[in-house]
Amino acid sequence: MATLKIFFFVLLIQCTIFTVSSRQLRKSNINIDSYGDNTFNVISFGAIGDGKKDDSKGFKRAWDAACDSPTPSPTFLVPQGKTFLLQPLTFNGKHCNSNNITFQIDGRIIAPTKPSAWECKTNCHHWIGFKNFDGLHIQGSGTINGQGDNWWKLSCKDNQKVIVYIVV
Figure 1 (tube, helix red, strand yellow):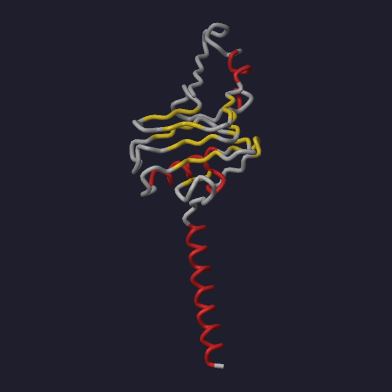
Figure 2 (figure 1 turned 180 degrees about the vertical axis):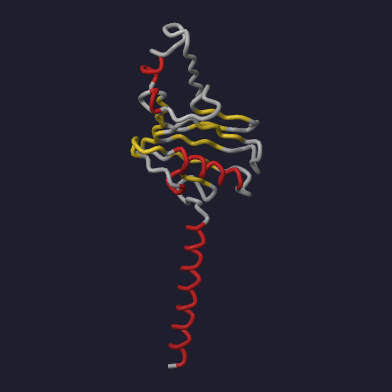
């Protein structure tokens, strides 16, 4: 009988430790998947990926977490099967702990379809930009669609008053 009580006590302790460890992992927003435990999935940081809602804040939070990560080679993940709408955004490596970040694009990234939907307060001369990096790796099977048709109609060739740059 005493052996059975000890067994259940040990089992209870193990279950408690597993539950606490699992909660801490979820709070850390590190997505453990086929890429490894140093992967920062934009979905884990609030991006929706429905192609309609602005996912810029989720991308920014995931980027900040990847930059703050103590791991030497974090991966920023744009997962497959999703379409992410982004407003103008700059990924800055100046204050990152690692200059060896992999930007893994397996899903779709799209710009707003209409120029009137472009939300930009400062530095409006690009859509997606990267700066202050020596070791950034961009890879994946996904796509980036700047929705160029509507933007080309605003080109300086056709409209001398408007200058729009899309940099990817």
